[in-house]
Image (cartoon, rainbow, N blue to C red):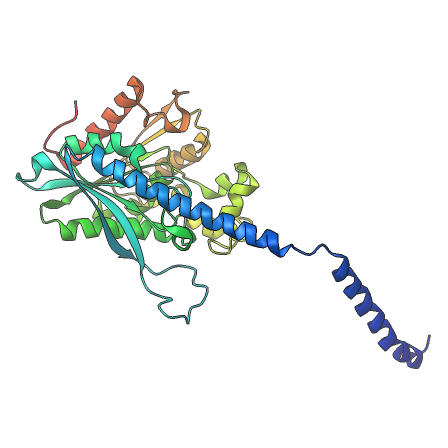
Length: 351
């Protein structure tokens, strides 16, 4: 076929291709607008339910510790969002408002300066709630002031706050800002006696706080901490991985941006440790596989860091083994409290 013939037939070929494309579009199943509205409504109801549940739980939380603590819920600011859909929008770069629970021991308020514990909740889109009050009670009874931040991405504050999640990123800064708010706004707290504790995701935030801001904390405890996001993406299911690669979150998979996942992983930042640290993990943990924490421990040792750790063998309770109410769990927590007391000197030692 000569060039002129090809040129003559080109428009006809283009028209044919466009017709085929149009037919394919017409035959594709169109998304039902009614179904779209139903899904949107379900999502709204889900977030409304979370907010209502949070409000109800707050009432329980305040009442259950009223006998020993002055309980409050405060607001402060963290950094602006990492992902801003409309950077030129009004107020787009404003700092994020963060809520936090504070607990002051009633029987120690008239004495000397109080040590402070920053208690970091766990969970992807978790929150601080009444399920942790037995731990707060044990701390308050020792004479600690406590702040428990609901950092960005926490549940109970609507979809907008939920989608601000920045796992291993700006959430660390939200927790640090809470610690600094507590010290600045409570003159009876000793800024030189501040510790930080957390389990799971909260243990990860604990580690990243002491790695990046060692001057702010005297001591730390990390229980079953998320330690290696790269390894974690390998053994978790696709639904879990999708939470991280969502457009409002990291926006990319570990395969697409392995260095970003590495930057957010304590096991890959172990050389920064300067703070006294105790780590607990459990060989039968069904959430944070022990291999993650073993990687952290090996990295700390390779970096020549001094720290304490214990790997429990098949402790009952799995991921929650030392946060439940068994004798073994209480003994494990007593080990934590004694470790913290060496550096924070609380008014009343745990027994």
